[in-house]
Image (cartoon, rainbow, N blue to C red):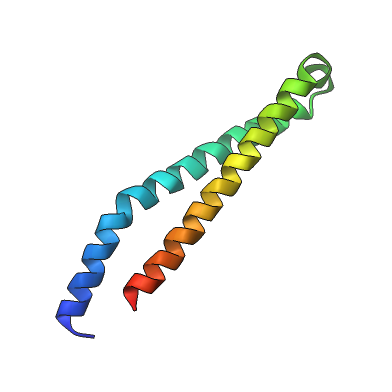
Length: 84
């Protein structure tokens, strides 16, 4: 691989890097929320008092995680096309 090609690939990676890092961090935050939410959902007293709200929050977190995975997959597919 030529130095020019390597430089070009490095430039492309650095340009998408802030977005990829943001998506990655968002995924981490959602994972942390999900772990803590599971603890509360497994508490029968909490579910009795706030079950509908907790289920709604759980759905919202799951939908957001799905979006993060789609963004990561799209970024990976885009970067593979650019790297060719």
